[in-house]
Length: 389
Ligand code: FAS
Ligand code: PHB
Image (cartoon, rainbow, N blue to C red; front, side, top):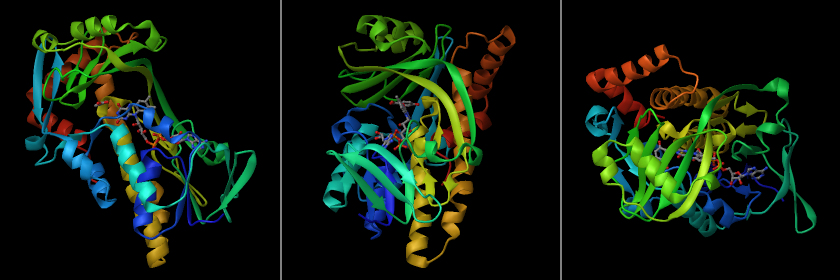
C-alpha cells in the first residue's frame, strides 16, 4: 500500500489532520492501534478555543458543534469562599470558548472520515516506523499478517504513549518534563451543572473544577494525590469532597447523581524538541503534554495540526518546503506559551505537599493580583481563550 501522508493515531490530532488533507486532495491513511469504539470511549477535554472551532469549520465538521456546543463568555475562579467572574469576551476583545466534549469532536471527525472513504486501519498491532529520512514506511500486524504502508511523510499523532516519539534516536531529541505531585479525579454524571460557567476553585483541601458537557450532563474534577485509584472513591465520597472545596453558594447548587464515568489523570508538563525528524513530524500529545488546568491539551493539538497541514499543503500544491521547514519552530513557539499558562494555572490553584509558607503566600498574592488588576485579568483571558495561531 502507498499514500502521501501516513498518520499514526486516530485521536483528534490524527483525525483532524486527515480530514484537512483529504479535503485538500492529499491522500492519507490513518493507522490506529485501538478499536474505534475504544477511541470514542475515552472521556477527556471539554473546552474548545476559537482556533479549534475554526479548524473544525475548515474541515467541514462543525455542524453539530454549532448546534450543541455551549458558547461561554466567562469563567469563575473561586478562593477563600468567594467567587470571581472573568468576562473573557470583554477582557479579550471579543473571544469566547465553546464547551463541547472531545468525545463529540472525535465522533464528528470519525463520521467525516468514514464519509471521505479514505483508509483507516483500526486495531493495528505493533505499529513500527521505518527509514524516517529517505523513503519512510510503516509496518504493523493485523489478522495474522504483516502489513506495510509506504508514504512521503509520517505524521506522529499517537499521543504521549505512542510509538512515533519513541522511534526517534535518543541523541536526536531533547525532552523537557515536570511531573506534578497530584492527579485529577474526574467524574461524569447526567446531572445539571452547578453553575452556568466553569468554576476553578482553589481550597486548602485541594483544587476542584466544575465543568459540563451540556445543560443536563456535568463534568467535575477534584485534585487527588498521585497514588490514589478511582476505585477508592465512591460517588458519595466524591460529591462530599467536591462540595467541601467550593464556595457555599456553589456547593449548594451541586446536583448529585450516579457517575457514568470516573477516572484519574496524572498531571505533567512535557515538551519534546524538535518536532521534525526527517520525514516524521510529531503532532499533538505525541509532542507535548500540559496539565489540563488551562484547558490547552486538545487545543494545542489543533494548532500543531494547523501548522503541519499548511506545510504539507504548500509542499504538495505549491512545491514549497518553507512551511514544513518552519513547522517545528512555529509549533514550539505556541506550545511553550501554552505550557507556561497551564503551569501557572496549575501552580496557582493547586495545593502542593512540599510548598513552604512563603510559597503559600505567593499563591495568595497571585490570586489577589489577578482579582484586583485589569492587566492581570486580561492576561488570564487572552491565554484562556487561546493565543493566535
Ligand atoms: P490522543 O492521545 O488523544 O490520541 C492518540 C491516538 O493514538 C489514540 O487513539 C491512541 O490509541 C493512538 N495510538 C497510541 N499509540 C499508538 C501506536 N503505537 N500505534 C497506533 N496508534 C497509537 N485536555 C484538555 O484540554 N482538557 C482535559 O480535561 C484533558 N483531560 C485529559 C485526560 C486524560 C486521561 C488524558 C490522557 C488527556 C487529557 N487531555 C485533556 C489532553 C487530551 O485531550 C489531549 O490533548 C488530546 O487527546 C490530544 O489529542 P491527540 O494528540 O490526538 O492524542
Ligand atoms: C473538562 O470539561 O473536561 C475540562 C474543562 C476545563 C479544563 C479541564 C477540563 O481546564
